[in-house]
Amino acid sequence: MAPVNTIEDAQRDLRRAFVGGGPGLIISGLFWLVAGLMATARGVGPAFVILFFTGMLIFPSAMVVCRFAFGRSPAEARNPMGRIALESTIAMIGGLVVAWLLLPLRPDWVFPISAIAVGTHFFAFRSAYGDIRFWLLGTLLTALGFSELMGMTSMGGTFLYWVAALEIAFGLWFMRRDLRHSP
Image 1 (cartoon, rainbow, N blue to C red):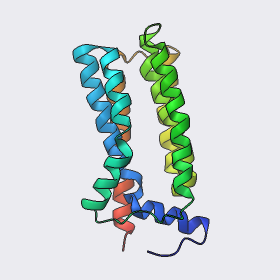
Image 2 (image 1 turned 120 degrees about the vertical axis):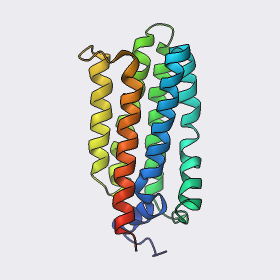
Image 3 (image 1 turned 90 degrees about the vertical axis):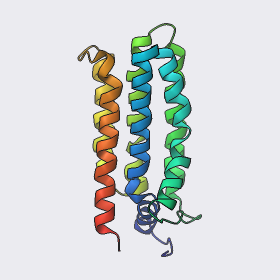
């Protein structure tokens, strides 16, 4: 591993350790997919429980996948960019708590607000990873959630699947780029 002396070094180290961020996005997308299946089978409440609790598994699952499937060593302990990703995750959890509080009042708002919380959290990943595509992903997820929340779209039971598809597609795109540019 190269030393982390500059912002660019820190971003490069994070991209290296997490395969460009792709595995985490794919895992998150798969969890949105599972929540979508649960929403179809059992409703919004159980699906939100699935989404919330599996969300806590994204980072450790991504670390395991990056380590064992891609042979990546962890990011440097001194890398400050990891803190940026963590700090945005704490803010995202706040948005998910708001979604949870609305569950009995406005179940139709729960997943759009969750998508907005997740989408806005990705804006900080642009700085953490040094990859502007995180702004595109954040914009698409936030816009998707906002348009559903405001009634500009009516995806109904497919909303969670759209979020899942976006995250998985971006995850594959990020991984492909990382694997092509890795030594």
